[in-house]
Image (cartoon, rainbow, N blue to C red; front, side):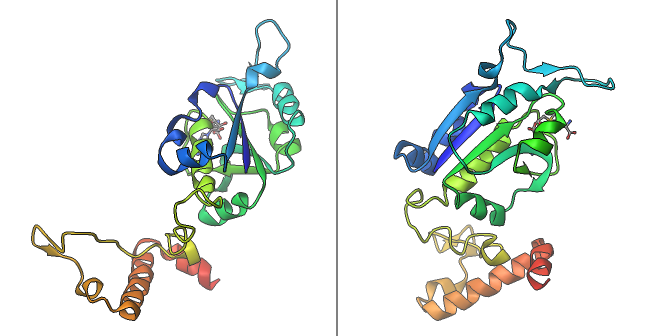
Length: 225
Ligand SMILES: C[S@@+](CC[C@H](N)C(=O)[O-])C[C@H]1O[C@@H](n2cnc3c(N)ncnc32)[C@H](O)[C@@H]1O
């Protein structure tokens, strides 16, 4: 899979993505990350990428021309995604969908955001990583890349690993325990020591449903709806 990123801060990439599973996925070429500096698509002496907002107000807005030029210069055909707190919330369903493309193009905003014509006439999707405002789209892009990367075939050690994880079948995952069986007086649930696979499966399923009901009833509601 090819992922391109357009940013004012290319030096932030690949950053934390070099560690662990994503790092190995990048090194092995399962995911190719190309990072473009937005300033490389300007043509003035000051390489200006932002300007004051029409109508007044605080802050600067990223100009449309360099962003349009950058996206039009791309080779890929997959969706162009603008990271914005106003977009659809990133969830595992969307991650799965995005992981199905051969390539993605991610645009990171800064300052007050980007000229609205980018959203209305250039991008295919607007994606948010949560209901809070960050200073730039770089961390959201890395979150999206990390989540997508681990679903790309061959990136995770075991192909089966993403199955049963939280949000698979709209359930949170069951709890995990490892050795020791008794830690500071807290035992591991008996059933997990039983070696009885069918019972362990049943227990895990009921734990997943129960903790989803307690912590994220909205996931179950959506399942029923
Ligand atoms: C300070 S924010 C702009 C917020 C904008 N003025 C608003 O109120 O919607 C600057 C950039 O950070 C990125 N950003 C901030 N929070 C985000 C979030 N929750 N999800 C995705 N991107 C975000 C976007 O790329 C955005 O253009």
